[in-house]
Amino acid sequence: MSSILTNTNAMAALSTLRSISSSMEDTQSRISSGLRVGSASDNAAYWSIATTMRSDNMALSAVSDALGLGAAKVDTAYAGMDSAIEVVKEIKAKLVAATEDGVDKNKIQEEISQLKDQLTSIAQAASFSGENWLQADVGAGVTKSVVASFVRGDDGSVSVKKVDYALTTDNVLFDTSGNNLGILDKTYNVSQKSVTLSVNTDGVSSAATVAAYSVDELIAQNATFTTNTVGGVTTQLADVGGTDFYVKVDDSNWVKATDVTGTGQEALHDEAGVYYGVDTGNAPATNVAAPTSIKDINIVGMASTQLDALISGVDKALTDMTSAAADLGSIGMRIDMQGEFVKKLSESIDKGIGRLVDADMNEESTRLKALQTQQQLAIQALSIANNDSQNVLSLFR
Image (cartoon, rainbow, N blue to C red):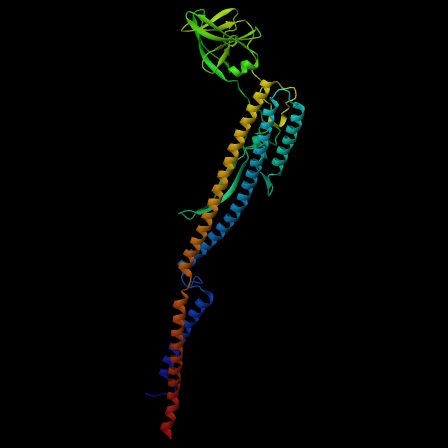
């Protein structure tokens, strides 16, 4: 049936052309944007996941920046600590030089004073973005944190993980509170080496922990060394000035008789009857005073035994500084590793998002070519269908 009012062939061809044009529009949108899922209407589930992951990736980018800032802070603190260690090594060397007879302690003290000022300068300068990890109020319980990661849990909850570094008396050089709790302003108690003896005095056994001395210390005091034999047992003795008596108790330690009993002219034996020495009734020797702090070192007029104790104190400070530098180095390494992980994680998320929403350009270009061909054929079909009405005129000629 031919009708000039209703051209069903043209309507069918037009419907096909509209469908092809709509498909071409979608394909061209994917080609121009590069996205297979560009809006929620394309695929609500994939669009929602991709949007969330893009948000997380932005957070990871901020984490990466924070890690860079944290690394700079740690590197600054480490550089300062490392420089301070070298200065304290110099101070220790100066103190060792001061133990030599005949040296001018005043000149050495001048050098030490300059080195102490340098330590102050290093601690003050080791600051990055207003953060100084080498001088702080130790008693305030300050903890420095570096953002390390952004985590989304299985339940959808999010959290920010941090690397913490507590500023304590073991890693801060100077205590800004004035309580002198930093490595360079606190007192290092250099305790006298000691030994514990089992002593029998008037038939009563007891344990006595007393100061122990080396033979070098006794030689430095011009001790006179003798031996004494009681009951077939020979013991080595040392006499310093006729007032202080020492006895050798093992291969490396000597003890002072007055430190053991302090009860007058009394023979001293252990439970096996070994003679230890004679108590002269003098008061026990006072242990060498420990240095007040590195920042307050003053060796002018200091005796050799005091210098020895001072060197021990400085060496303890060096041990603490070395440990603090090692901790900073470990944190720096962890931050570097975390930075690399965050970069890889961000790249992985980008890849995952791409798999969900990116368009396959090879596939889309092939589809576009096919649709263009279909469009041309649909136009030809519509043209033919429209010419059907014109053919009716020939029936009336």
